[in-house]
Amino acid sequence: MAPFRRVLVGIGGSERHRDALALAQRLVDHDHGELLLAHVAGDRSFRLPRRHGVEPAQLLAAASGEVRGGVAVTTTSRSAASVARGLTELAEETGSDLLVVGSGGPDTTGRITPGRNGMRLVQGAPCAVALAPSGARDAGDFRHVGIAYDGSPEAAAALASGYFLAARDRAAVSIFHVVAGGVGWGGPHTGEVDSGTQSERLRAQDLLDAAADAAPAGVNPRTVLLYGDPARRITAACDGIVDVLFAGSRGYGPLHRALAGSVSEALLVAATQPFVVMPRSGAPRAVTVAGEGSAGAASA
View 1 (spheres, one colour):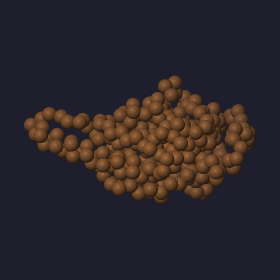
View 2 (spheres, one colour):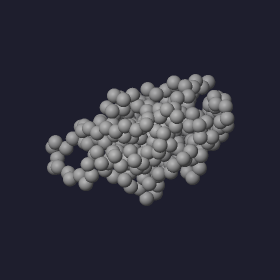
View 3 (cartoon, helix red, strand yellow):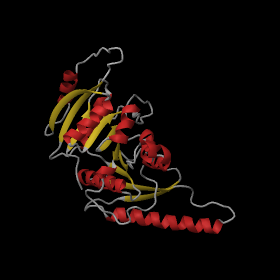
């Protein structure tokens, strides 16, 4: 299992970049981690100039001062066609393992509001992306790690990273798998439908058992089989219990995503805890789980 050793953090002009910085410090490898704090100014060539209250150098210096001792810190700033484009380019250039950003706007319900930049990063960043809810500045070890799992390569990457974090922080782990639809329903062929539902339930439980068997020493995951809408069911199961949630993102591009839907994006806008999305390119460096590729509905 691979830790997040090089973590890129978006530092902007609002207080919400402090949420991202707090989350990055919890996720970065404590022994060999490095934080790269980046301020990206979107190109405003064809718009009216905007007055900046604080210069990028001041923002970055203040953010550096909030990083705990023992973690290496570097800073950088640049202009780009958009903030998302600039952060994506930086992640590629620096070989970052993780990109962390805050919410795009305040939210009184405690949920993540990714905004346009956050959604673009989830769709196109070359590494894992973590988003912090507005005002979430908890510090210290994680207590309970949640993992949305369907056996896909992207979900395997989420499983590996979630397990690493849980082993490091001695946190509890819950693995969620959702079978779309109900447990059973009536109709002219009720017997056939019930038989199919039972088979799907058994396949899903086998998948969860295999994921649990892949846990490292000292990590004892709880497996949770849910039915219905994946984002709603996982969100409800995590609320008030899980303090970081991992999921995979298919990585097929915006057109396919629009056609097929995206569970990870639905989870993103519903989550009340920090959310980490693993890209297709990030899969499976660390763990191979029996049954990968089985049907399920817990990643994008």
